[in-house]
Image (tube, rainbow, N blue to C red; front, side, top):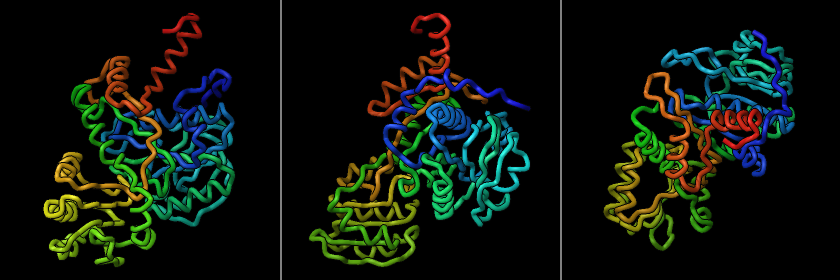
Length: 369
């Protein structure tokens, strides 16, 4: 199927794109709370805005996206719509199904279940399936290759249950897509989204703490300091199951603990036990994407008097809304947007489809809707 090239002059600059563009960011991750929350629609909005602004875009994915139906619920889903000049890093197998003409630009020598990740230049507007690297280290290599090939902004498309691509070690900014597909009423969606923001949005450590913990986050492992800043333990050990090692220091005058890797349930239980004994404890993690806990866990931890911060903070560029759910229980778009804006004060919240529809009405009637 061929797609008519939209008229770029008709694309009005959106506040979301303006913020992305003005920030000067080089890498943007688009992630969804769950399937069908409008992640692909949000990404297509950014791609269209970038085309209108004549910004050179690189595009890749963590995992697979752009297929006709999602691979979890098998619901029809919107395709990724690429533009002439876009640089796309995707697995060789997906190129056999591409619905646009493309030109091979480079190879990354990074393998994936769907073949080597190749860099191609899109020659026309249309649909494309994208499947990129899964490991964070490979993602960084792909991003670097796209930039070497001319991309000034690289967009990372997320995957279900995977958020490490949103880490500030990989992405300068993050768009979080949320919507009715999460389930429940509007207030349920707001609550679940707020809980997610509570984890992703932990504050960044101050300069003093960052300097103290720098070795942990450059070399990996675990660091423990007493209240006077004296090193009690500093080694490159696996952090996911480091709880037993931490508990060896429960009777010390603990001041700060830094863990570079993922924080799962076992490690979190150890940290919580230490916080009960040492209410002023400071815990530093790499960033919010490393926390595999619930927001209620974090709130309980903070009530103990302990403090949890990230070595790096995540820059949440915007929250996009999808009032439609293919599973039933859709919302009225304007009401959802109004409630979400009131709930997420301090964040840029938008519904890119509602925004585009309003702009069309303005053009047709000359009146603000």
